[in-house]
Length: 136
Image 1: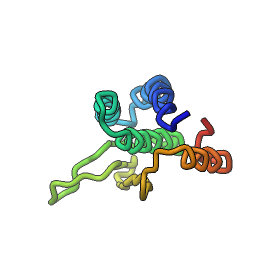
Image 2: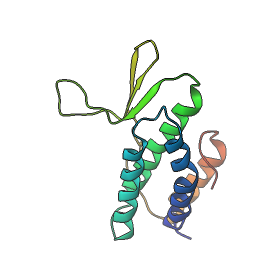
Image 3: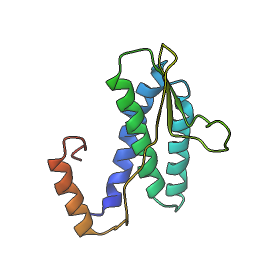
């Protein structure tokens, strides 16, 4: 079994569980932008593209879901708000009820993508020991 055999179940889980939660929370002001980005990465992958963008976007979706779970305040969350005086953006901007702002950038740490059975076994073993990773 190949690591990529698990991508379709991951996609289904995200579309069925994460998308509805993000879209339903009024604090996430532009959830559709992030979900559309993930869906476009899936479409490209299914047409023969790379899987890495799916993983990177899935990590951003997980970060958004975690932000909404961690804070019960009325902080507004925006995906990829533009940064002033530049043409760049950051992954998440949060605005708290008192007007305070916070910024969060998500990075996927994957120095080298190895698509082989040994890498998949190491990944599964690591997931079993990590409380933050799903044990698929």
